[in-house]
Length: 413
Image (tube, rainbow, N blue to C red; front, side, top):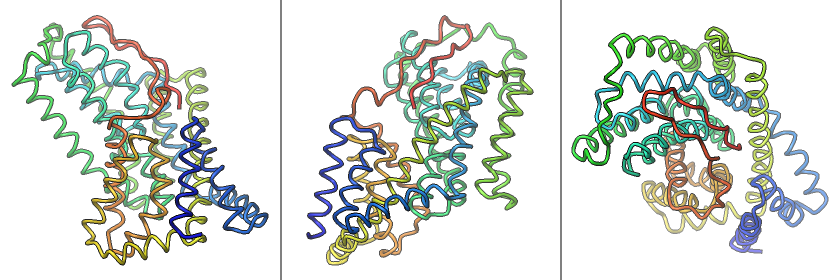
């Protein structure tokens, strides 16, 4: 079989399995079984698939994934994230489109504590978006900032998706995590500027809310100092330890999880029920991710051993595109794939092809990895053909003006 026929066969199997609603890990496992039987030597190929399953998850570099997930789950289920969002809402009372600004600032703060775009979007979408729509905000300001800031969570460390991309591609996880900090904060600043300018020049899109004016100066500042500033000790524990060179990403993730546990205990929010729920959700997400990594390892080997990867490289070398042209094509592919499949599936399909091309063209892989993370999140915001179940669960609104944030049901992972 030619390399085009091989890619068409494996891609067709994946497309068919995705179309009938097969979970990502099982879809890739089905494609791997067919590929291993045909291209790795029938029975011997199946044995290699089993060996890959053991070797791919027996990696110390994967430990940050469950630890980063645990950080966000603890803050989510213990309620500290909601108290932080409420404190930020009081602090930003004078800004136009105040709740839109709270979405950006609060989402960025939680992104630095959770590392999960799903948790970020669920938190903000279940509280602020519903309340903005109720108060008469335009759909652009009610939903746009929440979706945009959800994407920042994959850049600002700790980022579970960045750890997974580094593990699958061989890119330094430390460099990916640290390298995403400045771009993430820059994007957050631009999002905030957009919301402020929109609220100022189009006041009809964001009705002025006077309920916050009832708060005194102390009632605005004290909650921020009490409920937000101390939580950034978690961020310092993760990023500071890596920047100082005293901890690897795995050790930094351990410090962050421990700091989150201590924070919930000091705020007297830690309960056995919340801890059990956080651990259960962490296990669910982590097992799902590890299953996908198992499938990805064999899929990459099949593409390489069958000649599909080398055939693709030869074709690209024959065309001889410039590195910038190659990068633009990679990013466009991710944007298109985002209309059909989820983030992890995009990485599993493209990384076995993109990384050899990047190395051959002399592209800086850390920079490419960060660009891929942004493109993957943008792809998830494009008009989607995914099943409605891929979205987040319904959430409760914020409630009447001045009331405390209510806690939405936890979305399915």
